[in-house]
Length: 256
Image (cartoon, rainbow, N blue to C red; front, top):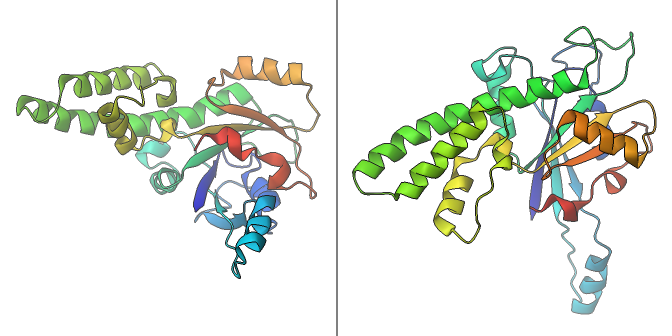
């Protein structure tokens, strides 16, 4: 069993440094845009103390833990959905992952270049989300065309088309697909939604790259200011060499 997680964000927000900490690798983390072009991949076993106990009980010679694949995806910029920067390829890499970690810079340091020339966490978050939403809209528009043809031919139900229209309206209003729920008991709609493979429908963890420790109240205030969806996690990150994915991620909360 494996889980794939894509690390995304603007250039120079700490994605590669986070990747290094999570995977104990030392890849390039230089201070300029597009340092990462092809996604770096790190495979890390999921800690499970019960696995060895079960192996001893069953007298199993081989212990194969579940693993997580981390993908350090190059910085996304405005217009990525249209191919700006190296956008289309980057968005394609995100589409192949199960979950997204969105890194947001929330510290000022003149030595660290910012692609927008100043630090603004709200704006930076919106830039990334807008590109993901626009890519999803392209997917939804194409799917709607096909569904409407199938509806006229009596091949799909009206509620399928209605749901995708509502999904289109949700995205066009600037909201993530994950904010529009679908009843898992409605197997047809639930399956349709999964088949769309929308980027903003993936489980998402927002990570604030800060220089100061935040209290729980500070983090709650940041969640409100950044308009973090209720279905997503918001974590603080102060990068240091001793950090590991064991202390960073709570796998059970990912709901995958």
